[in-house]
Image 1 (cartoon, rainbow, N blue to C red):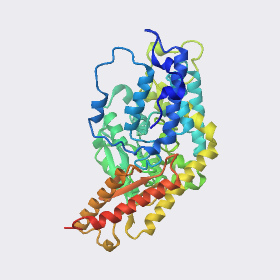
Image 2: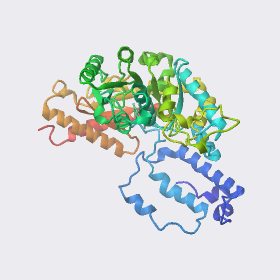
Image 3: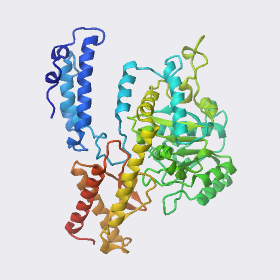
Image 4: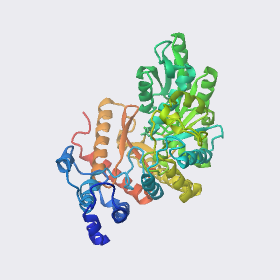
Length: 511
Ligand code: PLP
């Protein structure tokens, strides 16, 4: 696909050999290799559409290509880089492909990628203020920028973590410490079982947090949802009352703004009232949708989140930040600190610098990446205005897609579209009103599985699926920085063509 590196760079001599047996690359070799890597990166981003989004490989094929004896002798960098382009680059799933419309894309913008390069260059460990003052202080600043950008009050402070799963774990650990002070020291052996409430549509990371925190998956009460996949607040109240009557200890409620399957929005303001009345911690999972609050016209979806105790928003989902970067906002950083602070002597800062914030006291891990640099680069290079217009463009494309689904008699939308994700299925119009008949329901599931498979096999796009109210559902999520109108138009063409072809070609329509 691309010419060999040496031809591009004329630096083959430097890349051909490692001249020292100890120590790092010498500066001249590093410079030449870094230039070569930047060429690879720029070519990749320019040409990524030449690849099928999903690599055409079977499990085990790559192991056979990559496996071999542990390399004993040094390999020239030129060969390593050529092998990267030959063996590695083609065989990733291309998250940077503009046709990546599956799950929620984590697309890495240019500024975010540049910041990652510099993060690796300084390799600062942001665990203590002393271990990287600018990482700690810039983290506080970008947390503040993000908070203000999404319109939340100043009483929210926070930190950057790797993922929403970690952010929610930290939040629920703080909720546990608040309801059972001292649990961090004494453990959960005594006392009534703790309960967490989340809707049936809430992300599995909430149950994983409960598993990790000793509350257990069974300690998470899955509250039923309404026809729009939103938590039913009356059912929440009933579940809390039932647990109290049984002697259990309600601890926290998780409201989701932008659920993973359908991007539904729980009635957060009503849930906040219940939490206030019941004295429960309110955690809002807005991992995907949270950044949409930088658009004033989207704020109505977030009503009530300002009353939460903690909120998670993932810049690596919809703020074009390369994996990984999640923001945890919390009003009670003192409790977060109680939940995770354990400072052995060797980490104590003595003398100058003792007053800076040591972020490792607020999370389970000690070492932490300098993620603030990515967010700083994004805000500085695109500006809030640039970020707003990119998010608005994603929403506009999804709005068009929704209209195409709604205008197609043979398609059926299966959920509202509050943000940039459309859930639907192919459903020939002559079956309207008969969708619930068991053989037809089974046939529709099968048809849509085949549509999914067919469009993903084209390599031009990658979409994923979910199940909504028991129905196999196609899901198109438009939150990629490089997705353009032509990509969503093409996606709709491929899906509708496959839907039409497969619904007539399937041997028996039902039975
Ligand atoms: N919460 C929601 C609503 C999600 O959609 C997801 C993932 O898609 C997560 C949490 C977990 O995100 P992460 O992979 O950052 O842990």
